[in-house]
Length: 421
Ligand SMILES: Nc1nc2c(ncn2[C@@H]2O[C@H](COP(=O)(O)OP(=O)(O)OP(=O)(O)O)[C@@H](O)[C@H]2O)c(=O)[nH]1
Ligand SMILES: [Mg+2]
Image 1 (cartoon, rainbow, N blue to C red):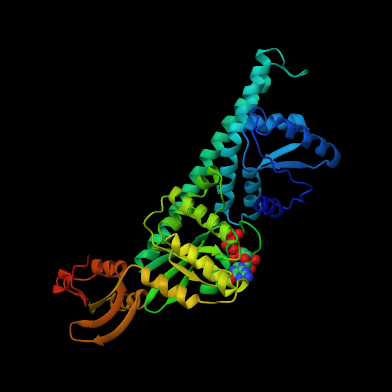
Image 2: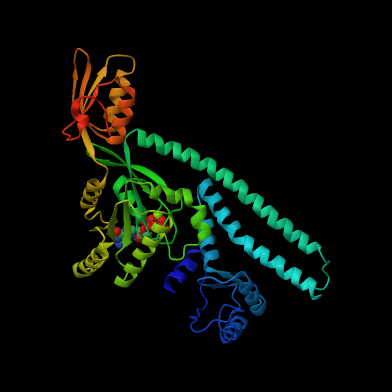
């Protein structure tokens, strides 16, 4: 209920009253008939603009409640969609939300159509309405919605293509990718800012961040980008998961995930939120990316409270680093753990033959890795550098046979053949 109210507050509603509904549900309304009556009396007195229901109702139940209560009824999914709508800043986020909203709306319109047709069939059609006209209109509306969804799909595909290109360029340039993920309001953007100095928006609200932001994270001898992105919540609507697929894929395709957890919550709540994140990871197909759990906001906890949370998370099999993004506590430890999980670096001996592209390749090596020595010899520039496998492979494609060798490696490739694997 606290989280549901936080959602309502984030969407700028003032909560006039709350009802906890337990017990058997009626199929007609989705809630007990007795409760429907009780809430109706309350509505007549308090006259709210809208009643919001969690978790969700079937479209038919929602329509029946609206008729019964003579007031607007929405469910938690619509509330989340409203928040996303309010917080969308980029064209991509706006399109993703419109797509999610439309996919969510189609069954409702279909329900309206079905009810209308049934009423017409039984002769109980609303007075003053012409038979068939309403049905045509609703059919047309569904077609329009489908058409719009397809158009948005196209536009989103184009944006996603250009993002993939950018990502490919980053990988070619030897960047590793680390993604921040976690429950909404856990402190992902605060941590992103603390680690990279980025200007991402931070707020004590749910779903402040909707688009990804990738910024370089400085590590000695490594090129790493850290990506901030959309947060998770329990029962994240499937339509949103689908619409935000490209954004979520950036998490799935990263080399390491930092799972940010709000440590200031109760032990039970920390556990619940971590489980929701793990569920979401498996829904988006993440199962083999190494995860570091950053137990955040420890500035708000006693040493014993930190210990209790760390032990609980370790018992769940997590690799935990307690941090405070706000007060920059233990961030070096966190970065070290992340570094240890990144794909391995190797030392290479490289000969860059003299030619038009020598200097650009040399500056490419400087950018992609850590250059230990650089000697201008008779055959070319002799470089010893630490590189990621991706950066070495890229160089390998550009260089003549034999001019790239991996050092300190037990693999047969270190025989001077220049092959990397
Ligand atoms: N005390 C304390 N507050 C923090 C810390 N990190 C973040 N916060 C606060 O937590 C709230 C949420 O922070 P954000 O960084 O916006 O969280 P987020 O995970 O990016 O949230 P969404 O983008 O909405 O999913 C803000 O009010 C932050 O100031 C921390 O280490 N300590
Ligand atoms: Mg954020």
